[in-house]
Amino acid sequence: MITIVDYQMGNLRSVSKAIQRVGEETLITSDPGEIASAEKLILPGVGGFKDAIAELNRRDLANPIRDFIDSGRPFLGICLGLQMLFDSSEEGGQHEGLGIIPGEVVRFPADPALKVPHMGWNQVQITQPTPLMQGIEPGTHFYFVHSYYVKPTDRSVVAIEADYGAPFCAAIWRNNLHATQFHPEKSQGNGMKLLKNFVSLDAPGE
Image (cartoon, rainbow, N blue to C red):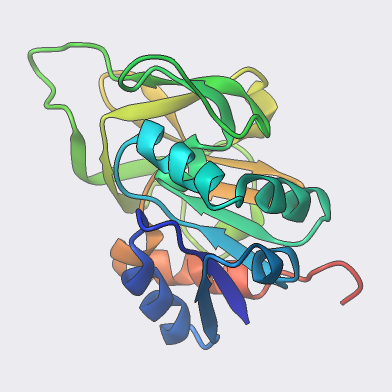
C-alpha cells in the first residue's frame, strides 16, 4: 500500500492512478495517524509554496511527514513535494519549508530566450545512480511544469539534473528520501518505470 498525502493541493488522482498502473494499491489521506503508520509515502504537489506549507501546517501534517522520513521508510516527493522539503522558498516572498533538506527554492532567472514557467519535456542527466532510475537510460526525457527550482546546500543529494538556461537540480536522493522536480505520473513509459522502482523499494525490516 502506497499512502499519498492529501492537503488539497496535489495532483492526487493522477498520481494514484499511475501507482495503480504499476501494480500497487493506494490510500489518499490527510489523517496524521495514517501518514505516521504508512509503509511508503508520496507527497505530491501543484500550486504555490506559501499556500501548500500553510495547508500542511493547518492539517498538522508537517511533523508526521518529518517523522516518517526519519523512520527510514521509502518517501517520494513530486514537484512542489520536492520543494517543500527545503529550508525556504522565495516564491511570493520568503517562506519557511519543512527544513528536511538544507537549501532554498529560487525562481528561474529572467532570460528573453526562455519562457517561465518551464513547461514540457526536458532531457535529464543522472548525477548519481539513484534506485529510482534503475533500468532507465541516461539522457531520457521527463515532463516538467515549474517556475522555481531547488538549490541544495549539499550537492551530494543531487541525483538528477536538467538544463534550462543553466543546469538545475531535477531530483534528489538521500537514503530513503527521493524527490523529483518533474512529474513521473505525466512522463509516460519512463515515468512509470520510475514509479515502479519506488514501489519496489524495501522498507526497513523487509
